[in-house]
Image 1 (cartoon, one colour):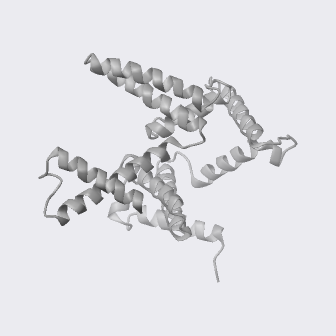
Image 2 (tube, helix red, strand yellow):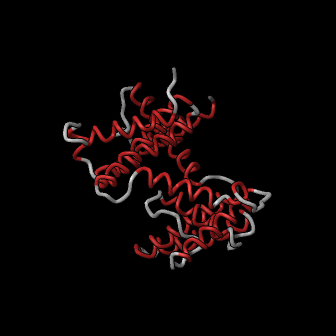
Image 3 (tube, rainbow, N blue to C red):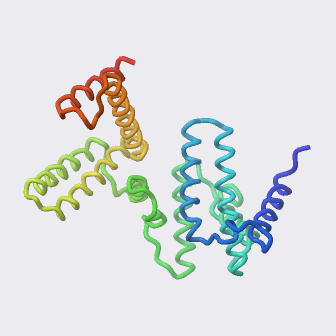
Length: 266
């Protein structure tokens, strides 16, 4: 008979305590918050990859691995007498209830946009109650990949109507920034070029966002396309007894165009 989630969760917490205990696993016992950071990031990206593949079995497994990281960090906090898993869950439950008064109280919203605006307003009141000023664009971790962070911050600014009217208008800013980057490149101004290229990328994210595209996904697709074409080029050259390192730039270009043509024909 399948066990209930609460029983299984209690068992998971017990397993974590045993792994960290005196008779537990040497590797698990030596881990710290800092040493676990790469695994937390890795498991998060594996969840994202499972979502992209659309395989439920893979998603189930990767979500489990990510949950284990949360349990691991909670156990470390309990050992340090900072907070317990019960306190973690209690805070989360209270937060979800308080930020959804249209579900758990008598507030009313009709659209996703209204629900989001209400959520942000409640977060603002919570910050003020703690004596802290909260910016409209707060809450986007610096550790996020730059494209994701840019798109999230732009989206937050757009909620208070600080935005371009549409993607076409945003593209004019891209063209302006590209001209400034070109001038910096021509002048050999490395520091200025870095600044201007950053502005170009940030402006391109605006265009993607206003076109209902995810900038990170768009770039990932471009990277994957390059990878496919490059490996096709390598395979073709290897089949004729050559390599990408041994042929001339001109032959590399011809092979690249041939790889592109192959992909289009498929």
